[in-house]
Image 1 (spheres, helix red, strand yellow):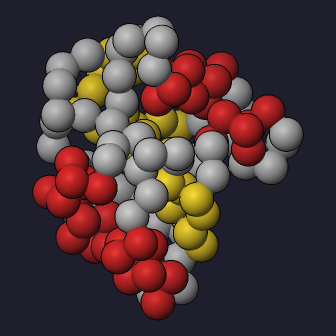
Image 2 (cartoon, one colour):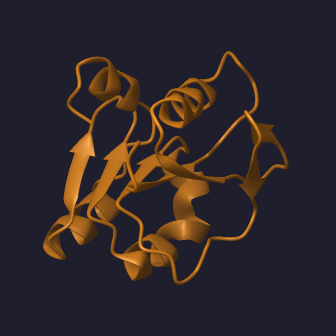
Length: 121
C-alpha cells in the first residue's frame, strides 16, 4: 500500500482502453487514485471526476488524452505542480512537456503500464 496520489487524466471504463487497464493496476497495487474524464464512469468502485480536484497534493499525473483534449487541463496541471507527469503514447504534448520541465517537474513520454510492469513506476 502506498499513499502516493496518482491522477489518471482521460480515464475510461472501457476494458479495452489502456487508461482502464492502468487504473485497475494502480488500484490493485494500493495507490490513492483520482480518475478524471470528460465522461461519467468508474473503475473498480472509483468514480470519475469531471472537475479537476483542487487542494490535493498529487504525486503523478498520467495522461491518456491527445493534446487537443488536454487544453482545458493545461493550467490546472501546472497549478497542481505534480512531482511527475507521464505522457502515454498518443498523449505526447511538447509544449506542456517543456513548461513542466522548466518548473522542475519530472516529465516522461512513456507507457505507464510498462513502468508498472517493470517496477519502475
